[in-house]
Image (tube, rainbow, N blue to C red; front, side, top):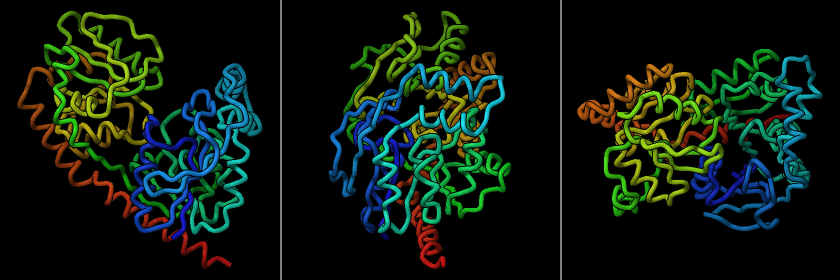
Length: 395
């Protein structure tokens, strides 16, 4: 098959679950198919500033075509558009479309390239809330497969979202909970009619982490629990810090890795490491007492799957249905509903080594069974082939 993937950002070193999932899938499908990626020159999804040169390159056996962003996101205009859409006053579809344009990326050449793509048997779109999906998918919907990466956020309740979800010929969902969320949104406008498969995500732990001694490298002289990801309110980090601080002076040491978007204050039971190398990340995860997942807005969490693969238990906010589902199906962790639940669960995990080992073993077994990238790629390939065959047979 000839396949085209449309995504907001693409490439090595780009932090983002959807982007990592897309890249892993593209590189595996490229072993047997002709795969190209249509994307922007941006690296940062907040500003959309052009970073990469426009034009073509080859990465991991994939042809990558980059198109410039016409203008970066203007924070004030985006905030005003968001206030109109998510505020208390009534709004219309035109307001939602204006919000989508301000959200970006504003890349007209990318949209033109998608519309002009005649050779692809199928076009696979990541992630629903960005312009290449909202404006690029409808003109090619008969050959379109959407990987929504939908989260239970206010935007998924918009008319713009519900109408988009009625259009693709196929869907690749990351969890059953994400599928249910999308189908509820689409039901208001006639329902999802496309073919669908739940493919999950894969894990590939690099061997290099075994040579890293994280306690010595980062001066961690005691057991610790770990958070990996953006230090951002949208990821629940403000709530995590609040709950952890409530635990008092005997709270376990909390190690935080990732870009600090909120200015995390110093605290005697907290260590902020910033960005760490990949092998350091996995070494830190390997030796953590537990991975903390406070986000309530996920369609899947690759870092949770990585914790499972390394035999580490996960403590997650139960309000995030996809992550709660992963924890429940795997048996690889615990969940909490509030600050008291967080306190009790974390103390239980850090005090009981046998519990950590039992949960870790269950998580590892789940990862071995469900989180192989070749299995994920095979499931995606089968759905995409059905969409391509359906499009070819259409009058």
